[in-house]
Amino acid sequence: KEALAHVLTRRAHEAGDGRLASFYYLAASFLRDGEVRPFGRLMATDGKNFYVGPAYLLAKRKYGERVVPFLWLHEVLHVMHAHPRRMRLVPDRRLYNIVADLYVNTLLERRLGRIPEDFVTLPSFVKFVVSERGRELAPEERRALEELARLVAEEKVTVEEAYAVIEKIPAARSALEERFKGSLFCGSDMGGEEELAGGGGGREAGQGKGAGAGGGAGK
Image (cartoon, rainbow, N blue to C red; front, side):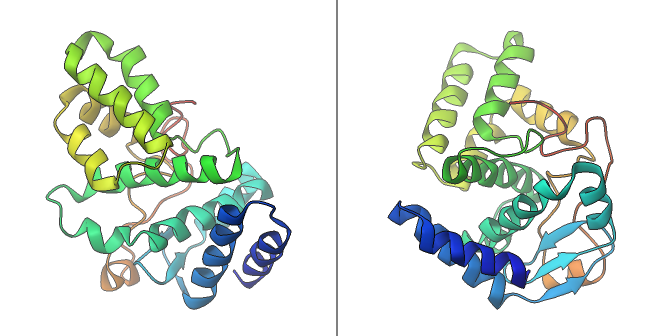
């Protein structure tokens, strides 16, 4: 954690783009402020602290060192946007967690220009739904999903707004549940402090077909 915070601070100094520099500074600050606590699975956050378990090492072994900064930055973005706290306000926390995961992956791609293939973004998920479930979509549902993908990519929509759109479209909801069930990087990495300290929530390594951020839905 400290090593990554140091790297992010250095990148902030080197960044020519002021917005990117601010992102790196904020990410480093949140990393330093949060504690790292033991966990029974892979990674999670309660909105301040970070939970890391033995499966983290398995993920590093499976995906290589390249995935490490993205794992941490993914959780940091949840903290920066207060997603664990905001998640308590919606009726379907599981759905919110998945949508928030795709949302922060989209932000990561926008900030960094590239992300690991297994980190599925909201635009790539929408592309998957339209391609694989297009027959189940009404014309207005297709338009709503495509507009959502555009707005998220431009950072003009909140997670709650994205959640509200997907919640109302049965084909999108079922695609999320089926495609991301048991995936490595998506769907269960947030919770309350007591819940996570007890080993609940979080991500397990290597579960599900094409285990990854979005279960291999592709970009």
